Image: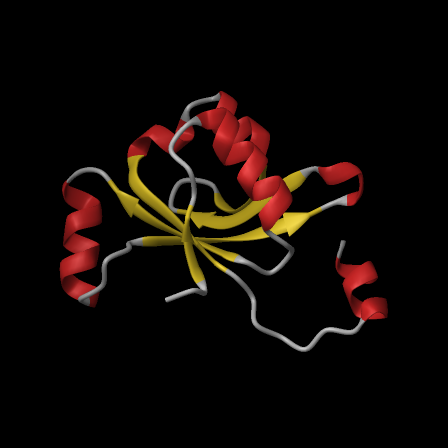
Length: 111
């Protein structure tokens, strides 16, 4: 549907797309490569096996809030996510935009 957008496949395009097209509260769905992701997708009958939430900060930096089995809940700098190559463990990443009635004052507080 039009609420779901594939994040573009190259690092520079991903960073640009996420920084320009996404907002705080948007969700990133991940399809992990390998057996573990496949088991999760089979058990949940879903196309994705991991989820994170985007956070936009002043100055244009983007964070990814996610829960990881080995470190717990953390916020990762999205630029670092790309530079360190962490995105390579996923076959697909999809953004679902937050659909909420947010006034300008609340939007300012979120960014």
